[in-house]
Length: 90
Image (tube, rainbow, N blue to C red; front, top):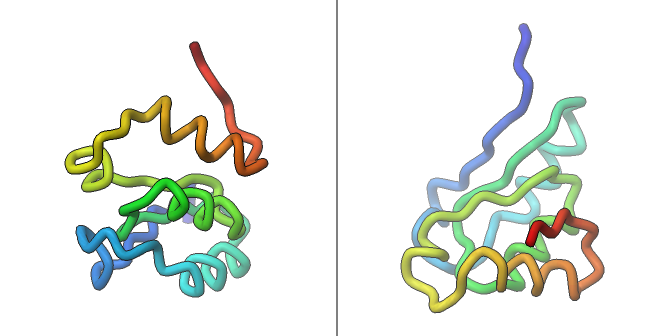
């Protein structure tokens, strides 16, 4: 019906900083032919890495950047250092 992407947010994990719902993300991303953005639960940089290791195209996080002492460039560096291919802008 013209959907360009799905923003998949785990309401149960949103704001908890306990990690993304990896099983749900993988199941949905594997069952559709459009990009999936996973959200809800990022509390550590490793949670982003776990999200990117699924079939998701992107990870979205709000609470992480509101309450952690990291900026988006530090987080990108953690993700890239884990071997995940992402764009790095200077």
